[in-house]
Length: 183
Image 1 (spheres, one colour):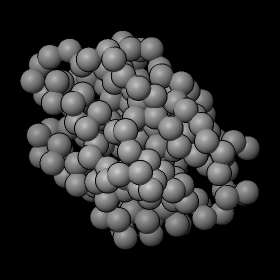
Image 2 (cartoon, rainbow, N blue to C red):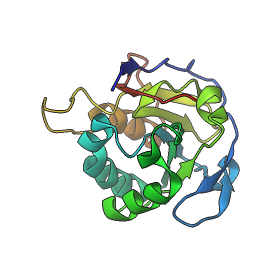
Image 3 (cartoon, rainbow, N blue to C red):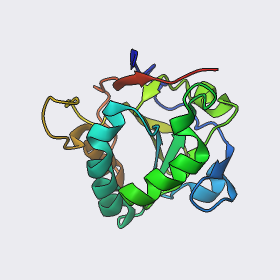
């Protein structure tokens, strides 16, 4: 594991479009199909990262709460599966079912989507408003594996602001986790 911090995409930047395999359904989907008219969360994760394991159950819990409020969640794995076979699509499907993902878990085989988003680590969160403009980028919360229980406070503060029609606080902190495994 190599520790990395997120790059912090510029606030207001437009979400890069993509068309990726949904490993749960076996169908290719694109951002325009998955976006919300309120807020869209794009999170880069993978199967083996201890930082992702640390937040996984809380992420699923929060996704369920916020999906009921009209927010869409999209998870993407961009890791090199030749060197990290545990992150291959068939295992992504297993993890999505085991963890109870209620959101698509997409496979970025070419890593072009991770590069377009300037994603660096897992987990790496990006929240876009109804116009797909970046309103939040950074961490889930301040906890780390072995250092507290995850709350999702940073992410939920951003989502609550967007749902209320308010601006998201610009004092955002980068995410940290395992680096994306580049080819």
